[in-house]
Image (cartoon, rainbow, N blue to C red; front, top):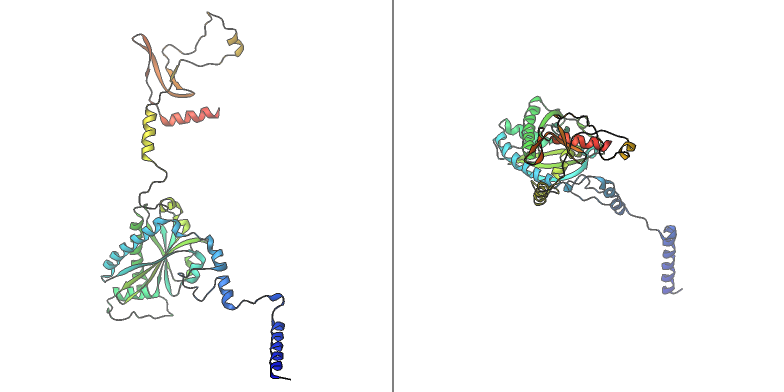
Amino acid sequence: MSAEAAQAEDKEWQTGADNENAPAGGERILNQDEIDSLLGFSLDDNDNGVARTGVRAIINSALISYERLPMLEIVFDRLVRLMTTSLRNFTSDNVEVGLDQITSVRFGDYLNAIPLPAMIAVFRAEQLDNFGLVTVDSSLIYSIVDVLLGGRRTAAATRVEGRPYTTIERTLVTRMIEVVLNDARQAFAPLTEVDFTLDRIETNPRFAAIARAPNAAILVKMRIDMEDRGGKLELLLPYATLEPIRKMLLQQFMGEKFGRDNIWEGHLASELWNTQLEVRAVLDEHKEPLRKLLDLKVGDTLMLEAAPEAPVMLKCGAVELSRGRVGRMGQSLAVRVEKSINPATQRAVMKLGGGK
């Protein structure tokens, strides 16, 4: 056998072996990277800044996007500016507050993703009749305690993991959270008056549940830097909390009016003032059979039950407007109005007339 024939036979044998190992019908098996891409999972799942794709993008498509509420971004930008000033006064240090991200999350996913240890403050929005969360991570907790207790600026914050927070640490962080909630009240003030009051401090996320796990919420991530120290602070507002002021948050700019045209309103008002209506003076009303009316002849008299001094009704259509006295002015009959027109009474008469 020649060398060329041997190489051809060897190549044919390898091709046959590959065909035997290949799946039936020519189907191709996906590798792990392709499966992760299809399902939307990756090693960067903890980073909320990564855009989700695949099946996970379809599942999470029902979330409410904060971009549908344009005024939220303006409110939180205002909150960052207010916090920068108030935290500088609170710590007597150079504090810089930055807005990292505004995202929409499911409440249950957020609770499961909170890095522990942390302090979770549950606050109540009084006028909105609902709750929200403020999460302070361990780095910011130790930094605030170090700054308020006079720690050296160049020293790194000491972290002692695996122990509960002391009363001093909880008290100092509570004071900082109250400052943040007061700034949040001022940030929402141009839109609506709402008071944020601290309800309790929790260290276990299960005890900070203020909504159902599938419910949508707005998550605001902020970074607080104090020279070489600092940490993250997160503000979470369930969508149910923002629902009462949803119309205000839909504004593109402060003071926007929805569907109102001042020119058209002024024109309509002027035309209404110039509108002429027919007003009738009714002396009395009573019912008579139709047969009696058909038998009336010239000279017959209809007796009214109203006395000569009884007031007459002024009516526009079927609506009674007012009452007055009949008199004479010159050669014409006149009615002197003795009862003012009450819009509430007028609407009630109109409803009563429509129900008959």
